[in-house]
Length: 167
Image (cartoon, rainbow, N blue to C red; front, side, top):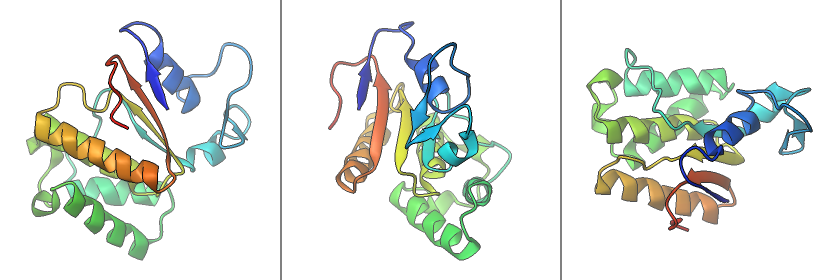
């Protein structure tokens, strides 16, 4: 789903409500059949989130970030390690897996953030302006990954102020 609108239109606020960061002012919010007010943990276990501002843990390594997120989502250790290796390789970060994220460029952090959102194999992926301000190579890599996820049946909710949505 492409959620298109100009800056200040409420796209980020909507994503924050849908992902349980903000409570709704009125009405009901359901994600994958779960009420975000009554069953937020169950709902959050089915989603991955890439917020507008990259928020990787800069004092952790790339590997450490993925291990932490996998553990928080309850991904078993063996599966977590396998997925982390696959994701870091796919996003061109395997050689930097032992480097702290504070040494990463914005594009590298954004790719790591996407890998962190995918470590739990979510059913729905929320992305708030995921390619904003990125170099062409990083933006292309992210768009191509989103296309593959879409083809695999992952629901993608992408906010943008750009008219062109890549898939």
